[in-house]
Image (cartoon, rainbow, N blue to C red; front, side, top):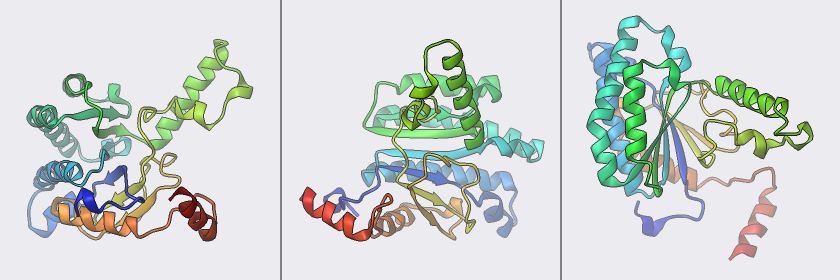
Length: 251
C-alpha cells in the first residue's frame, strides 16, 4: 500500500497495544525476556512502516501502570530494554525526523530511564510531521485522575470557572493534549480488550484485534489492519445515509 492509494478514510493516528511477547517466547522454549527483546525489534519495524505508509502518529503502549505487578526480574529487564532502545534509536529518530513524546506518570520510572527519555524527547522536539509516542507507566484511569486534579486546581486558583468546563477544557489537561485522537487501535496476540489504554481518546476509534503475537508483527500485518480500517464506515453518531450525503457534499 503506497501513499498514492490512500483512502480519504485513512488513519492519521494508530495506537498499538503490543501484546504476546511472553507467549511468543513460551511457545519457543525461550525466556520471557527474550520475547521482550524480539518485541523491541517489532517496534523498530512498525515505526519504520508507519512512516513508509504515511501514518503520521503512532502511540505504543510500552509499559502500563499495572505492569509493575509483574516479577521484579522481568520489570527490571523491561526498564533496561527501554534504555537500550532509546540509546540505539534516538539517532534514527533524528535521522528520520520523527518526534518522540512520552505519556504517563514518568516520575514513577527509574531516574536514569526518565533522564534518557527526556533527552530523546528534547533532541527530537523540533520535528512535527512524524510522531512517535511511548506510553510508559501509563494508565488511562490515572490520566483521568491527573486531569481532574489539574482542573480542580485551576478552579481553586480562580483561573477557571466550573461553568466553562467542557470536553475541550478537560482534554487540554490530559497527557495527550498535543496529539490527535487515535483513529485506529490495534491489539496483538488475540486478546480483545483495551487494558486501560487511551480509553477516553479512543471513544470513536476503530478497534482491530489480531491473533499475531507482537514479536511476529510486520509491515504486512500493519498494511492489512489499515486495509480493514479503510473499509469501515466511521459514523460518529450519524446514520449511514447522513455519512454518505456528507461525503457527496465534500466532493
